Image (cartoon, rainbow, N blue to C red; front, side, top):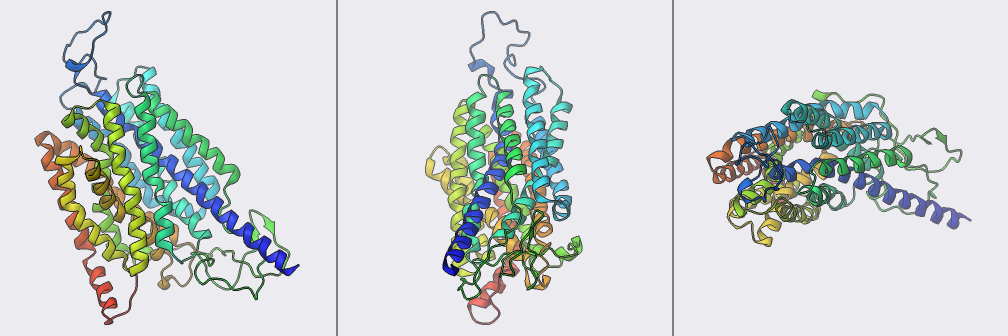
Length: 484
């Protein structure tokens, strides 16, 4: 009977872990899927009308811009696109600093469901501007601001949820694989938006909006926020670090999950919430948080500049149609999947999170410039995507989990959401600045945009220099080998 109880509990526990990993993967895939359409639709809102076949019964007043969508039909269209990008990204960056604190104090299931339903609503409203014939920049900018605020609910909540279920062993690899949702969402968003962009660009937003709203409903009914109380025989061997939760306070356990009480006095692996959430300043004082946050600011600047401007760059330089440019840009995200997994594996093996990030950023600097000239080669886009997104993925997942469960916290399980929000919020400032600078600089020449990206990669490396030196000392036996 004991053996049967053990294997039943053991199997159900791992089944739940796999289910939660899949759900959170699906949720954040939907978040990124709904962000991608704007980068695909840009090349449709402002086109080279001389290459477009004009309908015979179409009355026009301006031969040069008859196929463009006002107000993006003027020469300052790149600046206006920058306004749309930054309306979203600035709101996202500001909201992210508060989102982590809300995520610690509200049920994650309700918080995520609300965010996904709200994001779906505003994504659909952007697309409805096509059918309602809206040509107001203010309307689209307002929708972007509200969508940016709704999107801040996602990252701190899903990281905290995964942290409640998964242990410390092989954290870099597990989170590297899991973090591929970012690139998968970008790829699916590009393909879905590209399928409608040439015929009715409004559907490029409405379909992703409906998808993320649907996942919000799925979250409300099926997400289990923390580990279920499972009966595990006290004599059973557990692999150290694999089943212990990331967020664990003490030997005391809470046997309730969503109101259910476990009556068996068995050993369980459930997390007890810390009575007080960590303060903002307390999170900043954790060693490594400031350095990795500033590094992510510049790493995310590079990643989001590619995210928002690569399709338009390919369309302008190679004269591809909007759908073709969007499809080709997905290769960058495919490389990002491989890069994130590789970064996690290498950092797990070496124990050097900062060094892994620094090496990839150094390699990404010249690769960004080469990609600008050789983007038509599939291998260049794949390699550049891996080197650019690898450090970004590692910092926002495994590094955030390391710092959110740092020994200085003494088991405070409610720190991870705030630490994650600080790191990703700081990175989101770079995500807002990058596309804005690209919109301002690109009229002077695309080469100048790539020089900006190289400078950002170098600065990101500089902020990690102290941590890299510390890790090198650990490898040489002159100091403690620690992450962050």
